[in-house]
Image (cartoon, rainbow, N blue to C red; front, side, top):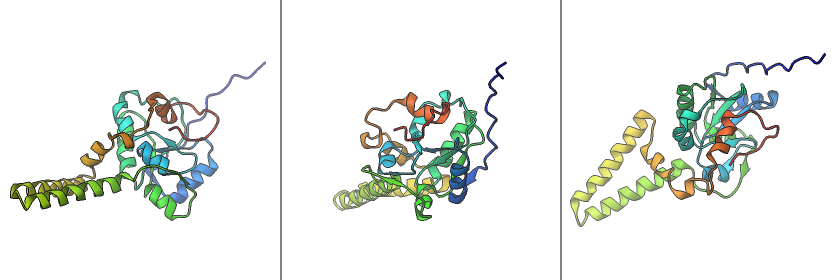
Length: 209
């Protein structure tokens, strides 16, 4: 008599965050472990951790009602520095996906530790895009203010926004920039991307782009 198939045992609860060494050990010791990169598709294409999947943060926001996992695999969320991954963790936690961890320091810490990465052609990191955009607006408003002084208030507004972003650990400008064409996949299959996080294992690793 054939013994009935038993459901996979639940993965042990992960801490809220993992160091690079802990994440690498998890990835090595547990083949079910998933690294979910929440940066934009352009950033992911530029540089990412081998075997990680791309599920952009803006996609998680748009489809938060669909975030129900059909697996018990350990999940570690990744971004450039950890800030967006932590925002994603709070979002999926509110949707009912608990026990998910964040890679401390993100891809930057992973690369600094000498861990392997895959490089390609993509866009600047979101942090770099924010710095460039904010600096360009401030410079333009100050120069324009030489002819029409009230325009210098735009620079003050941007400065206040950056202070607010630092205090609240959020960034409205990053959200806006994330909607631009070069930060979105050319043909975004939302269902396929979300499956990398919520669906059962496909049997082979790789990137969902």
